[in-house]
View: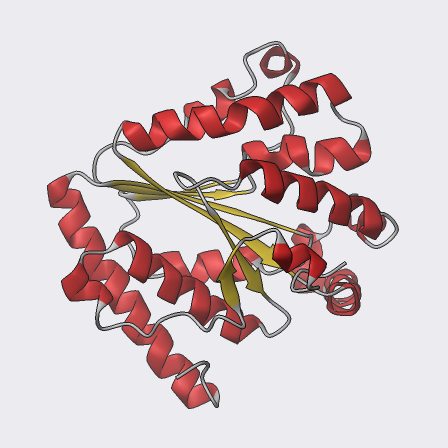
Length: 256
């Protein structure tokens, strides 16, 4: 089954996947698993929505969602990874970064919030940093949520017009469309240079929100849970979620 055919199928599979995550977390809290999930993507690509579905029934004590504000003056003087390292999971914990250290290769590059030298240092060092995390026993999952320019425009318009979404509106929304090409170039270099066997990227087509959410959760279950839990989940649809490869850029599988 590649994707739910209707709302009833979506709700049924969502509940099944959420139960699998609960079962996994019960084990992880005993076994001491440490899980870090990184969500990156363009504005309005659906990070908040998929994170809500993942965490809805998980333990509040053992699950944390981290969405850091811009760094303070003191943090700017620190080692770049320092403020992120403070939020890494301990034994039995799942931590989700709603944007992460990859800000340096994305919004900071496009908006000029860091220097080209700082950006180059980050791209050179980040894979070594992530290798140390994985070698320490941490399970690292990196997910890029991709969205078409047309769909992003519609979602940003809806966000501005819906008073219940007022807290999601940011100054960055105003330039997301204007600097579309610059964000595409930053994404392509980031994925190309930071996709490794130890810490690979997967990319998700998110124009259909529900389909994207289901496939992200399938991927998590297949990636972090033991076989007896993972075998009860469908595999992600490769047309929706796929492991990054250079050809994905040339073939147009990522929105330009």
